[in-house]
Image 1 (cartoon, rainbow, N blue to C red):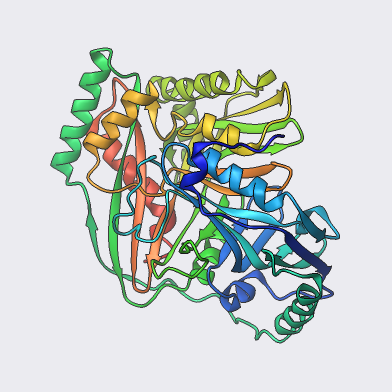
Image 2: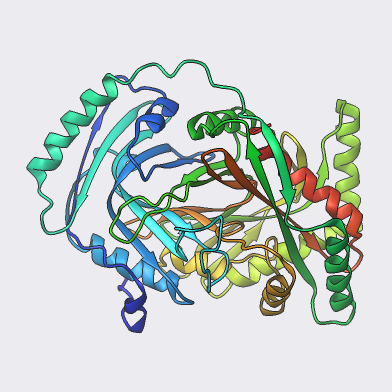
Amino acid sequence: MEPLRGEEAASRTSARGPVVSRAVELSSAPPARAVLGGAEAPRLYWAAPAEATVVGGGAATTVTATGDDRFESVRAAADDLFATGDVHAGTLAARPRLFGGFAFHDDHAGAPPWVGFPAAGFVLPETQVTYTDDAAWLTVNAAGPDADAETVERRVEEERERLADLPDPGPIGPPPGVTSRERTTSREAWRESVTAATSRIHAGELRKVVLAQALRTDLDSPVSVPDVLARLGETYPDCYRFLVEPTAGDGETDTAGGFLGATPERLVALRGRTVETGALAGTTGRGDTPEEDEWLARELMDDEKNRHEHELVADAIREQLDPFAASVAAGERRVRRLATVQHLETPITAELERDEHVLTLVKALHPTPAVGGLPPDRALETIRETERFDRGWYAAPVGWFDAAGYGSFAVALRSAVVRDATATLFAGVGIVGDSDPDREWDEVDLKYRPMLDELE
């Protein structure tokens, strides 16, 4: 894969190679919660179905970018970074990877609570602990002209000793408690927004648009990020759980807090030429009894509004993949059950015509109609005109990629920005022609629950 070059280079932070990386298997590893609690900033956390769990700390180097060419800029900087190196990983899971994500909008300005979050930002962690099904690995990375193997190998031994001495974190702490909450959108304003959107749909200007809200909360005590992620892991083990902390361009930690969540939606995963993605759209609640749960699931499968919304998303994803794919296949539609909600889901796989970088597919798929709308340009225009808050990285791609261009990205839903004793939560719903404002308001409430339950 040829590195991208051109004018986009002006918008990126230069991440200079070479990369020097060493990894060792740990005979015994402390739990991820202890590692995260003891990690240097900026910290990262990634746990996904059928993937290794990674806890990272510190920044060997960072990549940031702005503007509508930010996907190409990040890839170009990463190609430069990984062009030369001295890497001994021991196992594929422990290889050097860049972790981070993108803002939802190209012109992201970083308004509160997103101060410090760039339009695109990735970090090569200085240290990472990787948990596979049967082992744990410590990786130490360094980058730049002064990086050398002797220093990295010494750091490996120092980190191995530090990890062995980490104290037991004890039981997972309780939620901090919510003292106050404030919605960015009033119920009256929401009704007006949904009504205006459905009017555009009936007029033929839109087919679907996703409108979102933010919920600002004050807490009884500062947030323990390791504890929140641990509780999310117990409740949502089959979701993509993530933490991203922002960094300035020189790798110094910004004080803006962290963005974390447990999202059910994969954006794309690429290994070789095999692509995995899917459509996740259409929502209902969970029942109080198994019988009610089944009844709600059947109602969801049969509901015309939800089926229509889901089919728009699935069709659009297939169309977005088609220019790159030799074949695209969709599985059977099914109900995906989570702790508080149920969704319609259709798995989608593709085989690429040629080698591609995962960021090429991320750009092609973002935003999916599940978080943006159709047609994309008109939907984004409607979102900008309607929403009364900065989406920031909400509903945008978060994940990782490696030197080969393989990677895994999720859509950052069921998420919040946390800092000290405050948290801002985000949730959105798909609006189609027969959407009812009050019913959509209730669905937003459902989608706040995963994060709110871990704070209240």
